[in-house]
Length: 208
Image (cartoon, rainbow, N blue to C red; front, side):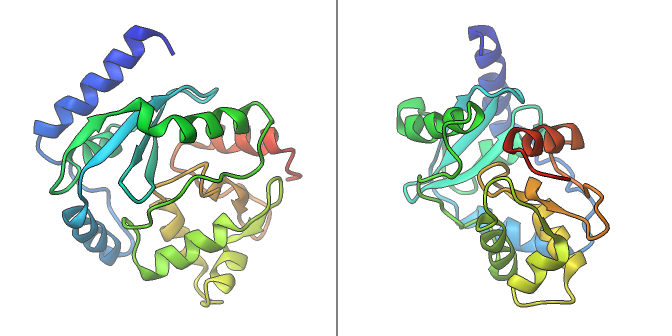
């Protein structure tokens, strides 16, 4: 990523710290928005780094526990949420996140099929965490349906709820929600856009 792009993204993160919160997106389940606000209020200091990727710059953030979120840098709402960092502070600290950025780079260059850095699940509620952990276990290059993930999370009839949980995934790529598709074979949704979902599936050689 060029120096100017890094400066532009850093400036957007810093400006968001003092900007009013963006209006929340319409949510099928209002409880998700409430739970996320509560989690953000408990969030302490956050370090973030800008990592290059074929899909554009990634903003990777971590607490003292582990990586807490990965955002596409063109997602302004997520950048604002990250910058405010709840009751703590958000600071640029690339060295603190070198391992995470290195693993992401290895993934995009075909040298890695899973991530080994620690994860902090603090931004997820109980059910969402079950869904995301079930998604995290989907092997590289393989696919699961929303129904599969819901069943693995203990709610076989909760396909729609699983979809909502994945739509609020704070760590796309790392928690591979791109590997979850519709039962009938459609791609389903993806926070970063379907072009990114297709790219990730093609990168992994997944058979649609």
